Structure formats: C-alpha cells, structure tokens
Image (cartoon, rainbow, N blue to C red):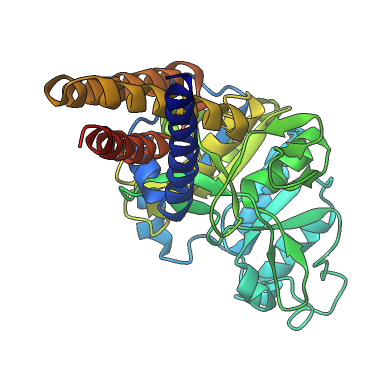
Length: 383
C-alpha cells in the first residue's frame, strides 16, 4: 500500500513538473495569448503629470503651414525660449531631415550649437544619412552630428502593439545604423538627460531589470530576446500640461523650469497617431509622455519573478491533478473550471491593483495537461 501511494505521489509530481514546463514553453512560443488577456486592462490609474509639458502642433497649424509645418528658424525661436526657462530635458519629435532652406536652417543649427546639452532630437535610425545636420549636406561649423550638446534618439519601432492592436509596450533594445552607432529609444534618452545618468538595457543578464542611474525598470523578454517594458498610461494630452507651439514665444519661460518638455504633433489628422488603451487616435508624443511618466514616477507594471511564478503554477497543477484523480467527473470538471476562473480573477486583481504581471496561459496549459494525466491514470488503475 505504501509503495502504491509513493508511486502515485511520484507520478503526480512528475506530471505536474512536466505540465508546468510545458505551460511556460507554450507561453514563450505564443506570447499573444497572455498579451490578449492583459493588454485590454490599461490604463491602470489616472492622474496629472505636472513635471511633463507637451508643446503641441495641432491640425489647424498643419492645414496652415502644410505637411512640412514650420520653417526651421521657427523651431529655433521656440527652442530658444524654452531653454531660457532651464528645463531638465527637451525632446523634439519632429523629423529634421534634409536641407529645406539652408539660410533658414542655419538659424536652427546655430541655436542648437548654443544648447546646454539637454536637447534630444528624434531620428529614424536607418535614415540618419538624411538628417539635416549630417556632414554630407552641411560642412560648416553648424555640423554637430555626434556633438554632446544634442543627442539623437531612435523613434522607429520602439513602441509595440499588443494582440488587440493597441500600443502597450516599449522596446528597450538599442538600434544600430550602418556605422554600428547605437541609438536608444526617444523617451529613454530624454530620461538620461533628466537624471543625468546612463541607460543600461541589460545590466547583468536577461533576467535583470533595465536601469537608468539608480532607477530600476521592470522588464520582460520575448522569444527573440527583445527586452520590453509595459506602458502604464496616466492619461491623454490633457494630462501633460499642453501648450500650443505657436504660443511659446510669448510665454514666460519660467513655465518650463525643471520640466521635461516634449515637442510634437498632437492633431487627430496627423500621421503620427496610434491606437492605445486611451484612444484609437493617440499622438505619438502623448505615448512618449506616458512612457516617461511611467519611469519618472516608478508606476511600473512588474512581471512576477519566473521562479515564483513557476512554483505557483506547479502547486496549482498538483491541486488540479488530485482533484481530477479523486473526484467524480461531474464534479471535477466544473471545479477545475472554477479554480481556473479564481486564478484569473486573482491575477487580474494583482495586475490592476498592484501592477504585478503574472502570466495566465501557463495555468491553462498545465491544468489541461495534468487533468488528462489524472484521467488516464484513473482509468488505468480501474481497468
């Protein structure tokens, strides 16, 4: 009798172990399942982002000035006014590609050369050779591509869609141009200016958090070993003290003191719009503002450590095995489904209340696996 129970215990443990590993393997191969369950729960909470200001170019200005919007000298005037207020960092999400009017463009270049080191300009990494300040098209003192006073940051492919189509994640991996020069994501580079610290996406290994100085960013890794963080949305444009672009020259620059100032398009008719949990039409600059706010205020959505999550799924698998082995089929199946529902509600609560991300798909796979093992073993023992 003792030997029989030991064999049964061994079989339960082995089956549950295999079921747990299978569940996490399936979650790794099909991340879209967990993504679907959690992506629709954003934003977790709202509020006001007092330390971030968005200087927006709206639809009216686009209709007035056309797709290219303002002359470069106008950007120079606006940036100069903002700099007077001594903000902590300025992010310009406007592509300054190619020479439009050399005389006018040089005004912007001259202003940038006098910057104080906290300006970040958006670029497409694969098209840095088309950038206004590239050595191929400007060879005077105005050329400063690589100058520490102004930093170029990647905006291409840094925000990623969830299974339902909305933007919920930021890719933290650096991108490289043809010369193997490294470009980090736009909002991350802005925060390195704000904290005056370096960013490290992989400080000690794939299981460790990314860091900006002393700030630790909870991340998760997909099957391609890309590193992501979740965006915890605080709100739309209205949450970030919006300022019309054309009003900046008349403003008191003290408004921008010690702030993070983001410049970009905010109109519904602009091309830089994306679906998010906030809206089907969310400007890219607003998404970047939410990313910055998430990190700045440490409102992270943190994945539960793999070891703890594995142990929880393993224990759940054992419980379901025992349930299916000893209970009648009419009772065991509804009870197992109820158990699965309780697990789902619990991890949803952890996610929405505490920002703790626990994968649900491993529970589904492991419970299905052990329930079949239990049914097969029971039939073999009673045959």
